[in-house]
Length: 68
Image (cartoon, rainbow, N blue to C red; front, side, top):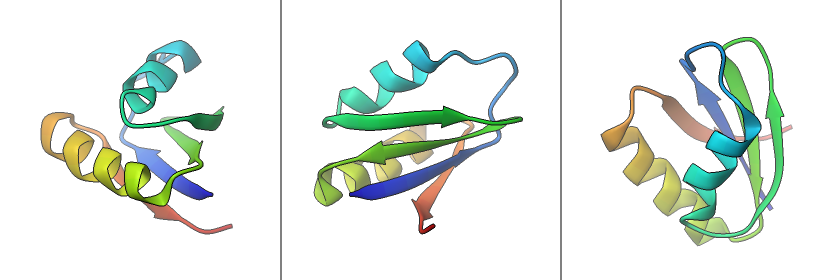
């Protein structure tokens, strides 16, 4: 599983919005939202990398792989 750190989120953001954005790339296991950031868990490492690349280029969010 790949965890993705998503920073620079506008408040308020809802789980369903984040989940739908990332599910366009693959299955989302978890969505955890903090203050202006979130952590998204995806099963497929390739799908996660594709989501990071494409969403970084078309959103104001900052995305990177995240290890706990």
